[in-house]
Image (cartoon, rainbow, N blue to C red; front, side, top):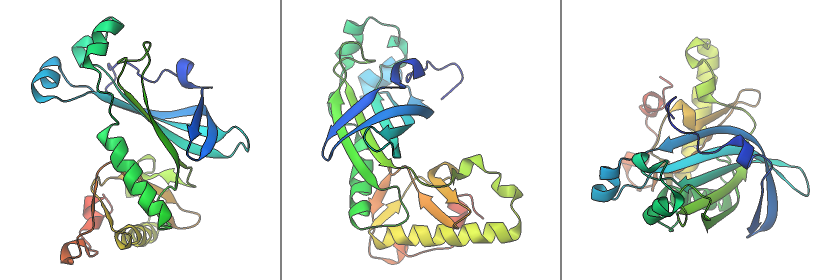
Length: 237
């Protein structure tokens, strides 16, 4: 998110909210905002290319019964950039009430990888799709929720990887290779490489692949076998 972009997920509004799910039945209270990312398209891009602006917020949440913590990702439709201050009835004309494609992708990947007991991803706990009310950014637009396991470790983008010793980096590389191959064995290839999509648990030498919004099913060809070039794609060379 650029410094001059509007804040979509105001902590005043979202912190303390309780979100209920039906499958499985559970309720989670939002307790901390970790980040938000917005993709704003212009009026021309919306009208001519049918590109819908979206924003995602990532939060720490806790189970209202057990207080166990998890991660909640919320994705909502936002108006095209020029309409960000339009009245709600004008913003509502842009509404696309269907579930976001990125949400759908992540649910499918995490759902299958979780059921396959893949040890290298955050387990899917619950999800739901709803429609924004008249006070939303785009009344009638989508608002999607995903609750997933809170992993031990730190997002790799928050770690000075290039300051690691050769020994530390080799341990990380081997853990990443193992994690990547675990996902491939379950039939999924992650297509959004980068430090921001890796969690590193240094204490247990465990690496996890996160943010499964862009992926493809494994093709059973040489293309999807492990290749050392993956280190370079993921910034681990």
